[in-house]
Image 1: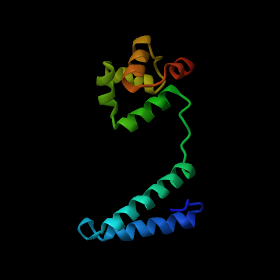
Image 2: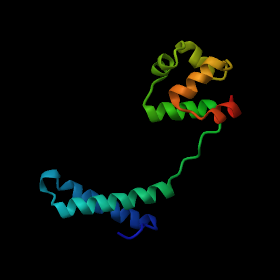
Image 3: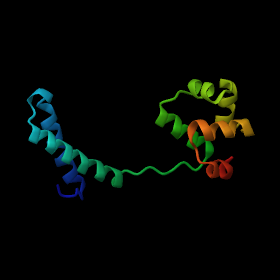
Image 4: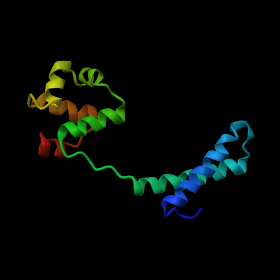
Length: 121
């Protein structure tokens, strides 16, 4: 499979994937499944290079990104960090400074790099 280098190539590949997927899993041959996998990998590689997200530059931004990745609501995060929902809300809104216990929990529970926390807390 050749590398996708333009948006028009990407759109053609996606249309081809859609067409093959529309056949349904019961009507797709092994060769077609192999083709879908190859096309999807090429599309994924293109997407990863074309659509990059900037890394968060604040602690709250990093926490929000981790919440999104882990599919956590603020209520669930508060429970996981062993703090009240109101305290988490105040910290996330910038109305209260995070304490050491909070920062340790963020590091261990959300796997946020300690250096990032130290630089942005």
